[in-house]
Length: 220
Image 1 (tube, rainbow, N blue to C red):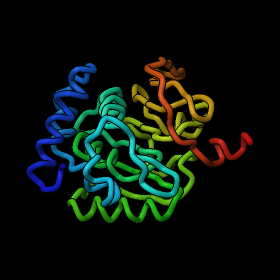
Image 2 (image 1 turned 180 degrees about the vertical axis):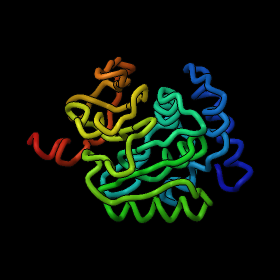
Image 3 (image 1 turned 180 degrees about the horizontal axis):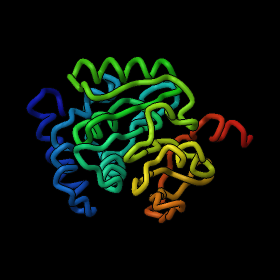
Image 4 (image 1 turned 90 degrees about the horizontal axis):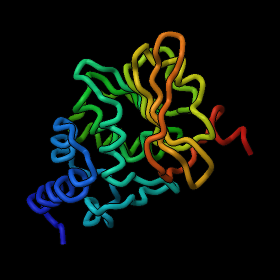
C-alpha cells in the first residue's frame, strides 16, 4: 500500500523506471518532471493508492486522468523549450498542466466542466504552480487572445483537429491531439510550417470526447 509521502516518492520512481523508460520515453527533462510531480494530489482520495498504476483513473464528472505513460509521451512529443507558451485543451485533474508548467514558461489551460476546473485550479495553487492561467469554457475554440502558442496539447478526442487551434499555433510549433471516432483514436502530431501543416500519426489511444463547437457537439 502507498500511504505516505516517502512511499509516493518511491512509487513515482518505479513508475518512471518500469512504465516510461522501457517504452522509450528518453527526454530527461520529461522524466525528471514525472519523478517530481505528485500525481496522487490530482486524483480522488479513495484512488490515491493507485495514482502510479499503469492505467487511467476516474476523477469524477465522467472524466479521467490519463495513464502516466500517455501523459509523458504526449509531453515528449511537444518538444517543449523553457521559454515556450503552451495551450492545454482539457484541464481535467490538472496533472498534465502541472507537468507542462515545469517544462515551459507559461501554460494556458481550458476546461468546460466547472467543477473539475475549480478543483484542478485549487490543487495546482496549493502545490505552488504559479505559471498557469485557467479558463472555463469551450476548449475547441482555444484561447485566441493569448495566442499564438509554441505548443498545443489536446487531452480529449475530436473527429478532426479543431481549426481554431491550428490558427492559434505559432509557425514551427507542434500540436498533439487524439483524433478519431468516440472510444478509439489515433494520437496525431501536427506541425505548422509556413502556410502549411504537416501531420503524423503516433499511436492508437482512447480518450473521452472533446465536446464543443468544433468537437463532438455539432457532430451528433
